[in-house]
Each structure stands twice: as structure tokens, then as C-alpha cells.
Image (cartoon, rainbow, N blue to C red; front, side):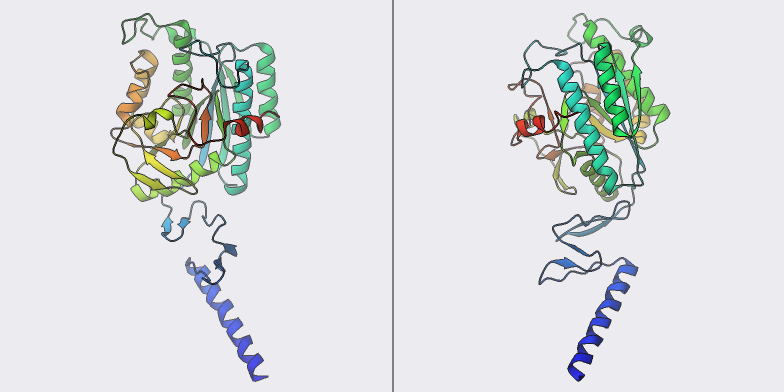
Length: 344
């Protein structure tokens, strides 16, 4: 009986100790089985507490001082233009509309999954479309309605912006009509971000297939690293091939489930905050009025002062042609990601 009483006392003391640790926000681990009794989880599970702390073993925890409150996806679509600046075929050789539908489907799936992890974060999808066929717009609306997420579909009026776009670019060439519509769409996206969004904005083109965990990873990473650096960020979800074509000094950061490296270049698909948009408004706006060379040069200038981070390996694949240095991310199963998003 004494032995049993002793075990009961130890059990009671253990429960009290766990409650005290939980109350004060301490984490304890049973090294015999890698179990965290304060969270009732094992170390191979997600230990992060959204908006409170980011936990990684053996590095410990990062207290979240930069909490994410909302994220708006601004999805720029155009099913009538197969490739903006070249005539090569894309990987999988499908109609442009198929890339648009699967890209949107991958984002919706990723947003829905993030709801389970971040139930308090406000989610919104804004599609800005230029000149897509009526049946394609019908399909986009169907996907948005099916998502049960806050959403809107805007038809771009290029004439609203074309008068502000210089017709000769940095290479002393005439700016194409496709590029003018692209610049107008970016301009419309930025105005919506500045005037209607409250926190994070993810600007994304309609030829990126996302992992199911892409949005969650970006939110976790933004909270963790922005809290560590006490600074707003730009996150590029794609590990582009061109990042491996030259040797550059970088910094490596730890996200939720990915490593992230500092990069000095990106394309026009990236996530950032309204604070960054307002801080560098003139730089962002210049990209909509003059075709630089490279086109994203204003972004690259911003990255000289702010942290732009890219994941290793990639969270999204850019479906251009197989030989493009701006396209397919290395060490990713492209076919699997393409196939699992066909049922939209």
C-alpha cells in the first residue's frame, strides 16, 4: 500500500508541475519518448502556437511579437495569354486556362488547410482578371464560390492605367500590349493592397502550383522571423532555378518546416505586408509605369533594404517551360503537384 501511495503522490505532483509549467508558458519534454506533456504532443508534431510562440527543437522558442491578423490573396489571371514574353510551350503542354484553374485550386486548398491552424486569421481572395473568356470566368467564379472563403472577382479595365504607362521601355523598345495589361493588373493589385487590405498581402500570378502547406508555412515563418528581426518581410514562395546560377552570400533562417534563405531577386509573385507597400509605394508604383530591365528591378532595389526570403525546398512551382531559369524548382515532384490539383 505504501508503494502504491508513493506512486499516486508522484503522479499528482507531476500533474501539478505540468499545470504550473503550462500556466507560465514553459515547455517540458520527456526525453524517453519525446513527448511534451504541456502541449500533449510529440516533437514531430506542430508545436507552434499561432500568434504566441514559435517552437523548434533543439533551438527552443521564439516569442511572437509580430502577430498576423489577416491575409489577402490577390490573384492576377489572364487565360487568353499563354506566355507573356515568349512563345515556348509550358510544362505539361496544356491550355493556359488549365494552369489558371489548377493554380487557383492549389491556393484555395492551401488557404482551407491554414484555417485549421489559424482559425482567427481573416482570409480573403481577390481575383483580378484581364480578358479571359466568359466560360473561363464562369469556372473561376465556381471555384471561388465553392471555397466558402471571402472572395471577389474584378474585371480589369486597362484603359484606367494605360495612359500612365510609358510606351518605350528600358531597352528602348516598344512596350507590348500584353505587357501593358500586365502592368495595369499589377497597378490595380497594389491599389487594392494599399486601400483595402489590413495586414499581409500575397500577390500571385496564375501559373503557380502551391503545396497544401504553403500558406500555413508562410504565415508561421512571417510571424517567427519578423519577430526575431523586429522587421517586416517579403516572402517569395518559390525556389527559382536562377538562384543557383551564381554564387552569392546569403543568410539562412528557420521557418516552421522549411529553411529560408535571403535572396536579392524575385519575380512578381511574393507575400509582404501593407506596411512595406506603403513604405515603398513609389518603388512599387514605378514598376507599373515604366518597363524596367529586368522588369522586377524596383523590387530588387527594395530587397537591398528589406529581407526577401525564399524557401528550401520550394513551396510553389512556377509552370513555365522546362528550360526556363525562372521556372521549375529543383528537387520537387512537379507531376505530383500538377495531378493533385486537377479536380477543381
